[in-house]
Image (cartoon, rainbow, N blue to C red):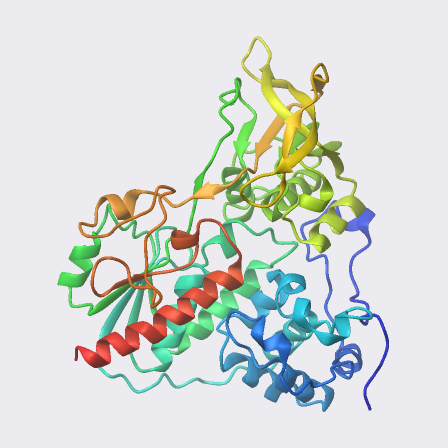
Length: 462
């Protein structure tokens, strides 16, 4: 019988005044009973609008029906038919603007908690005894993937299922890309990422770390090694800055640097000597998910006061509503319609404040959001001793500058056609390297499209 409750079954989570002092996962996940209860809210619409909102085409009503029936193994298997990283997607995908945003139940109440149910199925599977996986029979064709982030991992997994011999070349010492260096432990435990990657290795995917392509090897050298196609999923890890006075002061971080020190270099653990400042008061400039992650991490490192400084209103914030809600619960103060003008430094060159100006919203800009304009005479100084800039990233130019025949647009993003092929034959690209900084699931969708295109290309040119 369909459960016609207007609201989702609540997800158990740590109390705000407890979790803002630790890096353990905030949301604790559904129990089997809670998952089955939520699964019965699905109407199993004939045209499945939720599936059209999923970039990797997960058959959502099918896996939810299996959960409702108590067949959790079947639900996980159904998700894995199209998604390489279900435990990741269930935690960090912006479901509210994708699958859940198209759920019919959302018209007169809350949509079905698709993300929570996907997470439940994946977590349940991880708790079962491991099964020895047999890699698919090899077709003898080698394909290289550059970057072990969500786009590269998805592309590699799909190609491995088709029998290709896939090697991933990863610049860092650990695979996972933004999943390990950018998203904090309290949102995405690194053990979850490790387990997902081990599943790909079990299918025969090889991963070579510390391979900075463009330095250690070029794309052309990879092709000369016998790889018949290459997928570039190198992400967008180059931080952007504001260009205001004082950005070189001690205590100013890009969000990428700050989160990498915490997440990948374990600065939050006492057993590691990764240098990071324990601040009294922190200003995080930006309004996206990265800004929320940085602010909430700074709070957990012991900052007494953490501000989100954003030049528009909350309605224009690109961050997920859940992340904004959690940040507010944890004591983050939002300074909306404020914009930094300069960072102040003391005689030792250390941050001692940030001068800001109040803003008001004018006419819409090219993005459709109302353009913020300064209110004359509204300048004030925010008392902080650290500033974290979370104002965007762009692709690193290393690969495009060392690969003849590959083109990029004015933003430094690689140019691809509908099949995700670059301007260099046999070389494909996807994820943030093509779009600029975007979501994990969109990067995965690009990796999936590229894998199908690479397969078609190699079949034609075999």
